Image 1 (cartoon, one colour):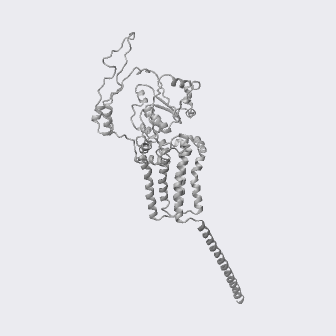
Image 2 (cartoon, helix red, strand yellow):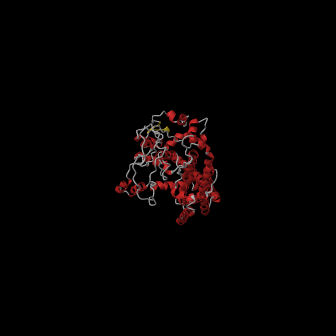
Image 3 (cartoon, one colour):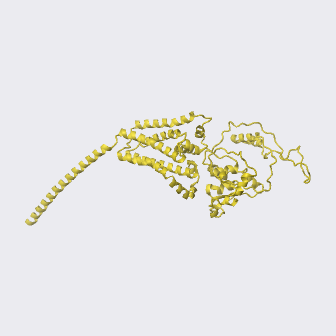
Length: 488
């Protein structure tokens, strides 16, 4: 018993000594940690921005960021700032102010993350627009992103090469991210701003937003394309140069949200009295030649180019006021008359070639003799002009085939072309030739379904052939020069 009791005393003594030692070590370590935190806090306090200086730094940084992006885009894309560069700068300022408002609504950590996301998204938008402009020479629009154009990735090699060539611009767009990281390291804080400060910034953002709009509205409406393009936006390529990237995307997105179909205002349409009715065929007072051996001069048919449509009757029975006005307008028009060239090529085949982005510099007597002959003999329309629409591939095809303008509020004819598959299109060249019993064929390079041509081209009166399921050999369809090589 005594041995066991002594053993417990010894063990108890050792335990007591160990506890005192551990407590001493713990207290010493705790003291070191507290002193280290004080030093670290003191060090950080020397490097950290005050709240006021942080806010000032944020204002300067965010505003300069969006101005910098627009300037970099113009310099790389157009190799100059342009005479209207004041408008992109003016439109960039309210964007920066709205970002300043957003990044002051939450806790500091959340605000910093939001700023990272905004900077990354802005860089992505500008890189995409720069590459798209470099490859296609037109801007990438909001309405176009949802137009089923993912097949643009078929040109991934060209896009990759263009990305490499646009690397200097990408590096310029990345500068704000680098500067933002440096500012955070230096102690700039994105604290939640008081409601009063946030309200002041919001008012400033709204004021900044009105300034460029007022500038546009005060410009000469009759001579300045800035005013017309801002309110009508008929030329997207000019818009992105004149107003900047974000403003062009905003204007385009608003038209998409409003579902603006481009309906023309007919209030100013001059509708006269109905034109007189005509008897189709040669004039009644002109003789007809029935003897093939006759030496008399041939009779020229000068009857009117008029369809057998009674627009007056259509207008009387029409309930839709918009369509009724159109019927009344068409009824008031005087038709043109046939001339000595009418019917000259009856019985011949018609081959209609569309060479997108083709240039007369490519026509050579030695290298392209057939194209040279076409452009130097026969009928050459030197005074042929087209309106500025900002259209490219699909829009050009639609206007060539239908003779109609595309909807300027939609992406480069893709939307307008898509409407053909759900509408009756009797006046296209294909439909009129097919109605006359002629075989109408249409061929196109690349994929059969690109831009939905497998549905729109047949709806316009053609039997369509292309690659990837369109009854044309894929190697032939993907050859960019094949169709023109056949010509020579």
